[in-house]
Amino acid sequence: MRRLLGCVLLAFVLPGAAQAQVDSVALRYASTITAADLMRHLGILASDAYEGREAGQRGQKMAADYLREQFQAFGIPEVPDGAGRGIKQGYFQPFVLEVRRPGGIVVMVAGKPFRYLEGMFYFNERLEQELRVEQALLVCAPAGLPPDTALRGQDLKGKALVVVDRGSSGTSPLATMSAWTAAAEQAGASVLFFATPSFEELRSTYGHQLSSARMRLAGDEGERARRRPERPGALQVIVAGPALRDALLDRAGWTQARLVKRARRRPVTAAFPPDLVLSATPLRSELISENVLAYVEGRDLKDELVVVTAHYDHIGKDGTEVYNGADDDGSGTVALLEMAEAFARAKAEGQGPRRSVLFMPVSAEEKGLLGSQYYSEHPVFPLDRTVADLNIDMIGRRDSAHATGAPYVYVIGSDRMSTELHAINEQANRTYTALELDYTYNAPDDPNKYYYRSDHYNFTRNGVPAIFYFSGVHEDYHGPGDEVEKILPDLLEQRTRLVFHTAWLLANRAERIVVDRPEGGK
Image (cartoon, rainbow, N blue to C red):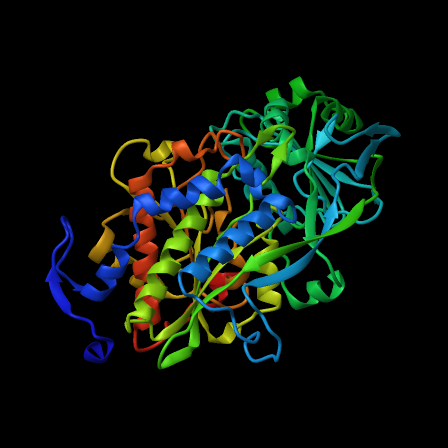
């Protein structure tokens, strides 16, 4: 097999690693992935001219055209016929987005209204119609107490959960809210009110995102819901400001000061009638966005497929201020571009992969993983023949946990469904890149829930094992400061080469990896 592949295997030792075998062919094409080329592409895609690449907008269309032009320049042909469905697929997979303007929900407590971005806000709008809530549970817990412990034994079906966060756990308010969201959903709550001391800070930090239109895939939502399990976070979550918090506390017979004092050592819970109505009036229109397809056909195992994804959209602009998203996810997009060029060059020189590889920059990730969701529901290539998805989302910088020290990357999901996938990624790293692989966010109890928050998840929930490569959140996340000059070129190159080598191993091994943990994708 190795002779047929034309691979020359050499003994090679990396510092601090056991002896490993290096594939000189893989090494040759990996060397074409350079920091200079990565930064050249990034300087274009993450420039003000691309207007923040918001899904369905002019800048996203410009980015899609740029990606198509690069794939053409690499010699990658159009996808011929929609994977045998008798249609011309081309380089684009278009999909229709239903656009919702935020602010369609008004909260009424005892007849008093609280409006969006005044007394409350939310990151996702789940309600389609008016919701009247007859019963609620108030909870305030000591710092550090897990939400599922505080709610143990509680049946919240059809009820509201009102959480008053003490704000002193050392965890970010969004991570705390995410943990309460998971616990509330598990207990069956219909709505969660999360009252945090960080209300004003969050409203200021995420102001642009909160005022931007929300999107979902257009079409039959009932049929879509039957075809797929719901993602975590399906209940309506409301971040409550001080006035809304106090109105709810008044209904429960508490004050903020007394409640926080009482909950220092043990959780306080109180059932109460909230006199609560959430009116929902969704405001909708439609846009079209596109996934971009670059298909490198394999050789003897061409009917099997490795997919590499990265979202090329970002959150657009606010007046004259452009959110360029150099790291999120310009870094992943240019990594995918460079990998596609390397695989295309290998194929042109007679060293192409045994399995086919689909390089797919996806759109509308920032609107709820919508481009990858659409692909998973309308796959161009059968999902049962898809070996794995390697997803790259933010690999251009360092986070505060790794401000100094060895080069690293977070690896999420590698062992959730396939122990072989995990082993192959570690083998690629030992042999070629020697990064520190950080599995912190792979923990099932990770409060950030990153496993569910990028495009790989739409593959795993459909039975395809995946890896999510990530360098962590930084102070410019979803802010206007996420610019090209803050990217670390050498680290971006090193991380990109790790993904390349993992893809190369997956595409060229004799047997496809085994899914031995099928429930891990849920």
